[in-house]
Length: 391
Image 1 (tube, rainbow, N blue to C red):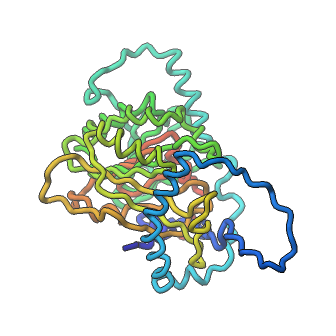
Image 2: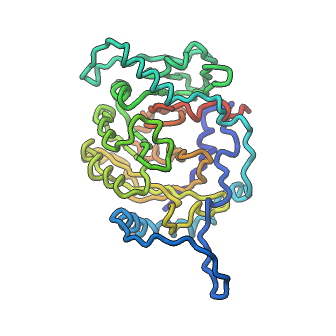
């Protein structure tokens, strides 16, 4: 069982007359392919000596998990060519993206957030509030088509809302730093230390979340993104006020996780029980090129062409809940930007009990979606106007 996600189309939904620029999801060739076996007559080539160390427990666990996932991945790969979109297959080379996409003059939100919060900690005389539901959360509503009254230092620790059902708003800090705010979108930018209670209070006030998707910055030496958050300690995820945000709802909580077994085990066996959740599903995101090839060899020991999504729900009996498939493969062409996940709006909304007006939240977000509440210290990163084109 698998499902293909058109990320470019999904990220363009609901923001007319704008759309995502072409080329953001044009990965046309694998990052590397498996080496072909050399024939006996082939000339001997110089090879780097292999490190023949004994595999660690983590290595063995990773291999075991891969063997568990492999049958459904192979089954998906066998069926994909018949279902693959023809227009994707025609893309044999990446679209040339305009030079100012991801403009270097875009605001470095994480650095400014740290500077702002350092100043607030030094000069603030506010007393702490223990009751998460009674925390005062300042709000700002985008009423004008173009908002210039907000400066970059006041955007943090404040709930910013575009209540319009149809109109895109623009937030301009400087002429080269203009950001697109989708209809019915809300965001709160701040750190884990100073804005999580604000988030919990706001979500609780609007009725509690029906769906929460998060992509934590898991510790990884090769991933520079994680350093943008003030902590890399996985145990700091305990500080997320999940029970306040759920507010007695049958909430779906979906967490992206790398292929390190200890992180998966941490979510299922420690984090979820603390939040009074149970793991109900484990999905896999299979990353393909436009030419229907895995971005890495399926059995590569170095990198896997997939990531995992752990889905939990409250430990309650609810006969009216819509069951989520215990295993599922979602397939898409990955973004050319580092660590940008495919949108899960349509995929997961199908299993939300509240169909009329669900409260959907993305944590550690780096973009905004119509109808969603986004939280993180760089929610506007991929909302820079240079990532969009006007029809």
